[in-house]
Image (cartoon, rainbow, N blue to C red; front, side, top):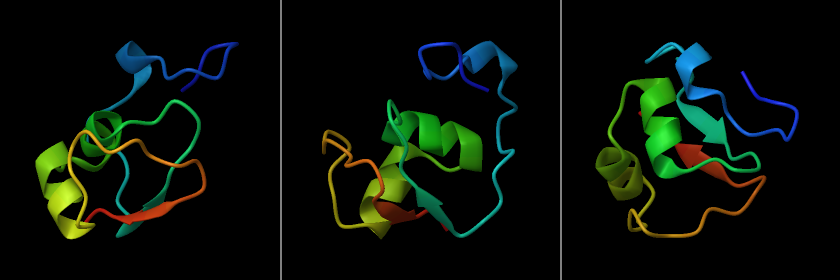
Length: 66
C-alpha cells in the first residue's frame, strides 16, 4: 500500500506478504521495507546480493530475497 506521494503506508502492510524469490526495487524502497515484506532481514537480503545494508538501492534493480 502506498500513499498519494507513492510512499509505503507501513501500517497497512502485512509482514511477510511477499513470497517470490526476487524483488524489483521501487521508488522509496529500502532493504528494511523489502525485508519486512518478505519476512527476511535486511542483513540477509544484503548478504544474498553482496551489498551492505547502507547501499542506496536503484529503482528497477532486481534483488534476491530468498
